[in-house]
Length: 241
Image 1 (tube, rainbow, N blue to C red):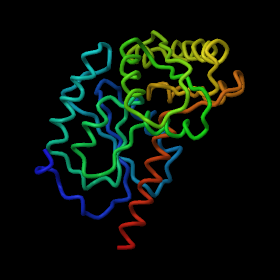
Image 2: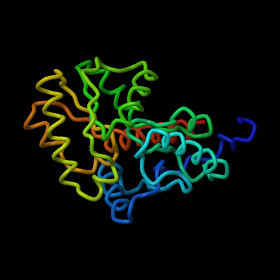
Image 3: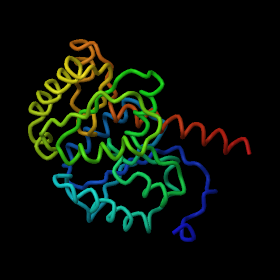
Image 4: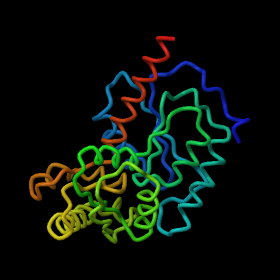
């Protein structure tokens, strides 16, 4: 695999790539995500969004996570990595992150990994709220793979899949409010991680903080700021050589 990887020595472009593992989002949903990312990334940094064709539209079944990774391998086999200085693998619970990294000559940000590391510094009990039981299983794999993480209070399923949330955003908000309240009041969580990129677009961060007295880690915000820091570090290192 590595013998076919492109060179790691091309110049560092001031650009962040955001690659979606699924392909079912509408143009309006993609525009919403772009706006959410842009809130945390300065205008002089280019944002390039890609959706992997040939994979599942959404993650509705457990086996679709594997299908997405197979599609990603095909997609990245002829990918022009030189357009990006860093890439965000845009799944909040990092499905197939290590496989994507093995294919990439540039740093790849996993939102879940970054959020868990950030939470580990604080060290307070964390609950992951994600969309359905299939995502709960993948969240378990993420927690097993990441060494730096805080105490885990719970992994909670909203039982509302992404396909439904993008059609009825208020249903998604109601489910987050319910599960976050249970996480804080019954599970003892002091931090909640929104375990789906779609949940990061629903605008509930401040409401949950105010109503429940907990910290909220939004995967879009965490991924964007981590990617920006890595990009700036790469650019500084490259210019100093």
